[in-house]
Image 1 (cartoon, rainbow, N blue to C red):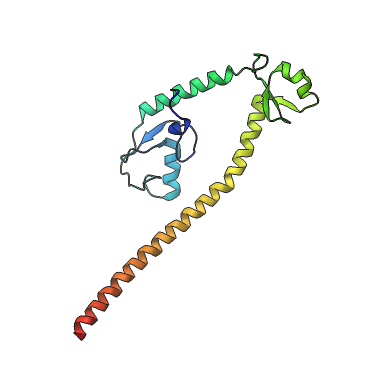
Image 2: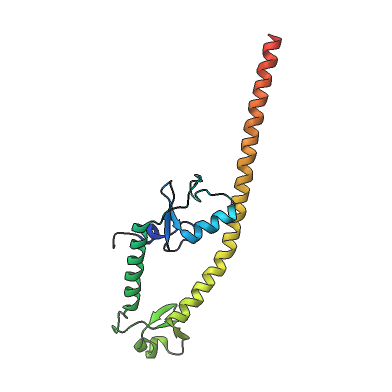
Length: 178
């Protein structure tokens, strides 16, 4: 598992580790919920990456599901075993001033005297909330860019059709004149 990067286990829609991954006929995988909401939003059953149409309900990607579950289990074990490099104590606290995890001994040391200290899980929730607040406008921009891309693609296709029609008319007129 050590050679595998986290990105390999992340859904390209939600950018989080897969939950209940499904695989499409084009071999792309997504979280089942992410794919369903994508299809609902787009009102078309196509792959979010390559846009290939999918006719049937995608099957569960069992191998990927097992890999993700093993990865999450290993990550949780590593997180619960996080130790302070100075005191070999568990890192249960987070120093808001230094933006780093600290152990109980570090909290009482001179380095963190009069600092704002919070439990790690509380600080993690706050950071996750900030990240999600930052992510929302980016998701909106992405949605707008996708809409603009669709319009540009439609315009390009329309221009292609117009060019073909114009070329055909020119050739017909040239034949008449010739």
